[in-house]
Length: 152
Image (tube, rainbow, N blue to C red; front, side, top):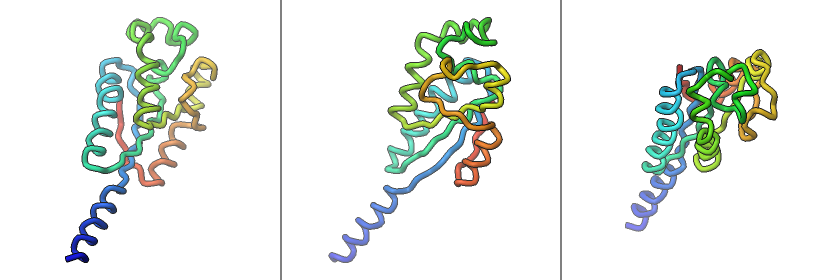
């Protein structure tokens, strides 16, 4: 009987340590898509796995039209006329920082695209890290076993 209880406990511990990995390829410039799939969808997915006593490691690779969501001051960028992000700016940083801090989401921005858009590091949220390029970031994550999910 003791062996059975010990075996059940051991199996439970092994399942609790199960780690799922996902890399989101974030290219959308659409505010509604961004809100649904990043601000809402990623926490929902993370909570789902935690509810099953599993861990989800999530990385978001930022490129394409998505740079504008990660800027301290949109008016100091090529996205200065994007009214949707200007309107969302007061709450956007707080919500994204919560994803980084509370949900332990890693944000990686494509340096090639950031340079192309003339984005200065001081205008990019401090919790966003840089990757040499989106392709390099995606290759690195997928070679570490991260499942690929596009958000475009």
